[in-house]
Amino acid sequence: MVESRRGASARAPRTNFESASHRIILGDCVAEMSKLQAGSVDLVFADPPYNLQLKGDLKRPDESHVDAVDDDWDKFDSFSAYDDFTRAWLLAARRAMKPSATIWVIGSYHNIFRVGAIMQDLGFWLLNDIVWRKSNPMPNFRGRRFTNAHETMIWAARDEKAKGYTFNYEVLKAANEDVQARSDWLIPLCTGEERLKGADGKKVHPTQKPEGLLARVLLSSSKPGDLVIDPFNGTGTTGAVAKRLGRSYIGFERDKTYAKAAEARIAKVEPLPEESLAPFMTAREAPRVAFSELIERGMIMPGTKLFDAKKKLGALVRADGAIMFGDKVGSIHRIGAVAQGAQACNGWTFWHVETKKGLKLIDELRAEIRAGMAAE
Ligand SMILES: C[S@@+](CC[C@H](N)C(=O)[O-])C[C@H]1O[C@@H](n2cnc3c(N)ncnc32)[C@H](O)[C@@H]1O
Image 1: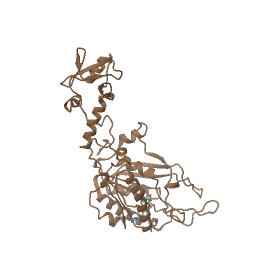
Image 2: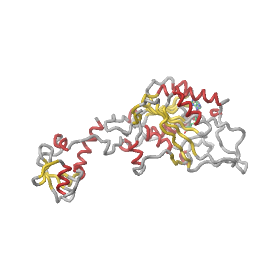
Image 3: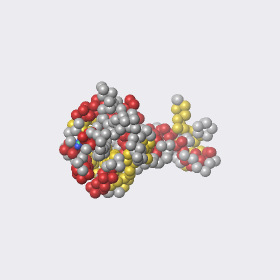
Image 4: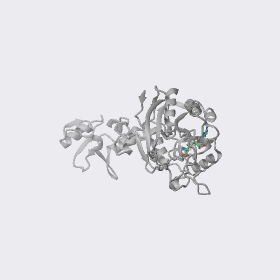
């Protein structure tokens, strides 16, 4: 299995934000996902019923009622009924996934171990489990066990041999002060303005997930323009984040009230400016550009003088792409080092050309070429 660490490729096709679409299909996710074109989906995020098996009313110590998940959609007659349902929706999702697609499933201790075992049995290849640590968990009102302060997300490829799945390793690292991103994420529950409320002031849905969680999921394992689906749309958190991040989205929800609320929510979302989502490239990932290409493209003419930032040192550009300092001829790097009496030098970030607006680093000219390559 080959893990793609390319991040967004330098030659990734341009995202057509205009064509990104977002819709919610009302109905049973197993039946409806089966109608999708096989192998068409880039990413699945699933927040299935947890099968919480709540028995009786949950009360706080002051006897007030706790607004827990006791909805019909979360009820199954037995573990085996839950397992059958899990198998059915996972198979429908898998059929719709591209060979390089990945899937995320979130759950609690009530269901995630069953889901994980079934995923392995069906041939999914587990890549990571992420612990979503809640910074503001709901207390365990019965007080007899630990507070449930986390949920688990399984991230998996379609199968063991899946190649080229998206993992934006470098982006995540850059966003994490250049330290490799970890598998435990501290994110608060969805509260305040973000929480959808009805006209009666009550929560529209009992298990609305925080957008911050979905943003991390989509930013780590999808690209702008990808098709993301969520079999258990609920309030449309995945759809709202997908739209904001320039991904297309299809959500499935069998409850009309939730589907309507989600539709209204997603409609209000403004996609972020395209530049803020543009493919990210580290120096290591960027395509190689030779200094001679600047000459070939007419960006620097032979005979031009290159200068250091203080304009104290100057070198002449030759027609063959080498540069000359006194009687020394060589690459922009070697001559940069010679001119400074240094061991080594990155010529791209040392030499400048003179423009009407002042000195311009030749690295900026290289960046212009690379930007053109990404748009090709
Ligand atoms: C745990 S909630 C998802 C919440 C969602 N992640 C959010 O942020 O709002 C699960 C949702 O799946 C829906 N659901 C349950 N079984 C379904 C099925 N077979 N087909 C479609 N939707 C289903 C429920 O109505 C519920 O809204």
